[in-house]
Length: 369
Image (cartoon, rainbow, N blue to C red; front, side, top):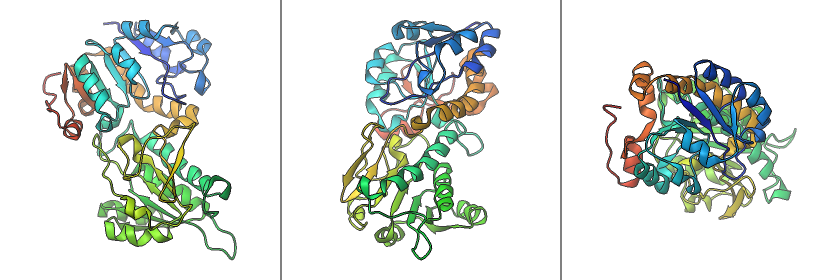
């Protein structure tokens, strides 16, 4: 049955990514679907309206009309409060949601009875395939940003991460050895920094030890973190519990052990952050200082490299977009069972247990989509 797939323009501050590239439009149109794209949706990452029109999309200047006509709405970031009134029963929303840190949106999704599918909770073979490309970008970006913030003109300690002959390199500690943590560590070792990865999974540590000879691994516990902090120049929080709030591993008193002008980059900010002092920032105003430590806590880090990020995102989301446009949800899940894990809310019920637990709400298993 033909569907209307809609791609709105992102309205989050400095969010220049787009949910669908022009090159993906013809495959949907050939299947008989309508593809509606909001005017200027792709402009921020280098895809003008003309590129979509050439591929068969219809440009829509009015976001209210776009949302109202959509069967499947493909976004990048979670709906903002001004978009909540557009949520409705019969609409399938496919985007990053990060609901564990967002009670207002969680309640809005339940009230509207929308079907909300989150990229970040689709799990396949112990991987999060729709989150990993953005985690890769955020991990690599964390070191680029952190190294820059260490410069004295930005309030940093004046440490060059790579050092120079006769001067020791800077020290980087990465909390979490997942996708973002590994990419952060690779960038930091590439710069010549001294890198330690804190991790709790021994098999993961063995893998890191075999594949990353220039980084060290250390079991992640409070004692080891406190021991490292007085010597750390750049601390990167790369903790992820799929669908759940990030644990607060970095307490305020821990930061008091760090040297003034050190930097904390909290990649986990989308899920509430892994530091007690974390609060979301924007690309316009990305940093603040707590306990003498520069905090970078931008909630949509990959948007800084919007073209690369949009291409990487569409690479992994499009097979699911195509599947959802061709089949009812139950049939789509039958073909790709991992899709069930992405359904966070449906028909007025929360269907993702970690999200429900984060907000003290009732959880209803997705048994019969």
